[in-house]
Amino acid sequence: MELLKNKKNKSILISGGSISGLSTAYWLAKYGFNVTIVERATHIRPGGQAVDVRGTALEVAERMGILNIIRNNSTKLTGMSIVDAITGDEIFRNTEQTLTGGRHDSPDVEILRDDLCRVLFETIGNQVKYIFDDTILTIDQDNEGVNVTFAHAATQRFDLIIGADGIRSNVRRLIFGSDDKFIRYLGHYVAIFTMPNYFELDHREMIFQHEGTPLSVCIVKDKNAEARTYLGFNSDEPLHYDYRDIKLQKQLIADKVPNVGEKIRKIKELMQASTNFYFDSVNQTIMDAWSKGRVSLVGDAGYSVSLTLGQNTSVAMVGAYILAGELAANIDDLQTAFINYENELREYVVSNQKLAFDTRTEPTTSLEQTPEDKTTINATDMPDFGQSVIPLILKKYQ
Ligand SMILES: Cc1cc2nc3c(=O)[nH]c(=O)nc-3n(C[C@H](O)[C@H](O)[C@H](O)COP(=O)(O)OP(=O)(O)OC[C@H]3O[C@@H](n4cnc5c(N)ncnc54)[C@H](O)[C@@H]3O)c2cc1C
Image 1 (cartoon, rainbow, N blue to C red):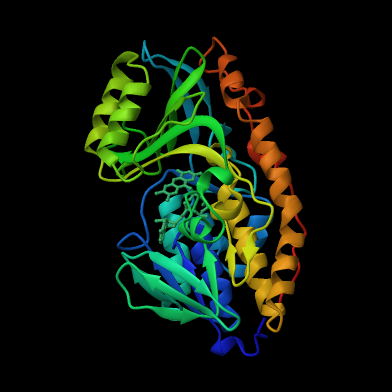
Image 2: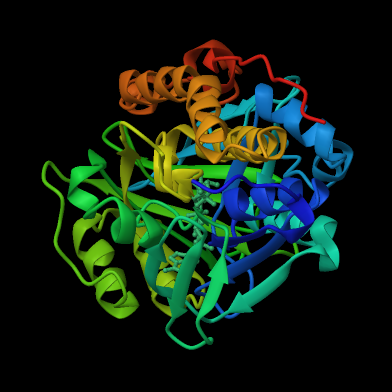
């Protein structure tokens, strides 16, 4: 394999412009690589509820110089309520922690996915080229580089390709094989969408539960903002549906989430009108190797932990830091860069994936233990995923 000699002359294409793609691009551009991002959406893809920057990812954010910015843009939720979906009664209230964000006094940052993407995008500025509204069709590697064809843009040649295109990664499919080889289904489906602040929340989280199971979670960062809403259901087997057909996916979730109570019915109605809708199963990506030739994967594409644990974003930011750092440190030897990337990150990923698997039913179990007295504040009844996050000691690059 050709030796990489000069970062400035080395061009890297990243597929996917979300958390892992933008984070990787930030570091690679900082180290002097010539970076292009191809993103299927027409701009940085909006949507989602809150994500968490925890543990080692806080250190990465600090090294990126964005920790204070993301703290300033965090959800700053002041508490949560659990509401009986049928009666509409509040059955539990907590002002010390939330289900999604953990304890208020922890150093972790809960931030809307859109806000984190915006901060990353703005921090990168014009150091990276973007090709929006496009996707890679073919990747053809040889000893000196990679030829890439796109659905719309002209064919280009790069030194390296990074797949940061999420759980259904296009790059992974093209280079490593079909999704079913790598995706471990965790038995749950989620829809995440924006809707009007119908429940008039302000820096609060409201969980609608039925028979001990949370069916929907609404987060409102500011009383004038939209509600970021989750609807979910369990399914023993993965469902087969068209990943591109949003109308059908909305119908699917409307059919699967039981029609219990007026509030769930209203949420479903508002979901139908939402223009910002995300739907997928909750999965892990399990791979023996994240790199092949001149292609490597980062974030959910290579090692999704589980969306419901809220740890994917942190793992993606840490993975991006290590991949870019190893590429910069081993500019003359791609293979060493990829081996080091695996060696530095693998244990962290495996531990986080084990944690997600072990705790995947924990919220349901805990929420069943809601106290009778709705004013009781009992933080210990709630799972706090942030507490169990596995740390990693980061190398310093350059
Ligand atoms: C719309 C949306 C909403 C989400 N909401 C939440 C949430 O509420 N809570 C949570 O914990 N996690 C959420 N996630 C997942 C979360 O962002 C990731 O688990 C985590 O941050 C790791 O990010 P990632 O960049 O690896 O993957 P993702 O965030 O999934 O990003 C993948 C990116 O690749 C792009 N892409 C996909 N296919 C192609 C292609 N063929 N060509 C080019 N680009 C492509 C996508 O448009 C997207 O921008 C959401 C993801 C998305 C896309």
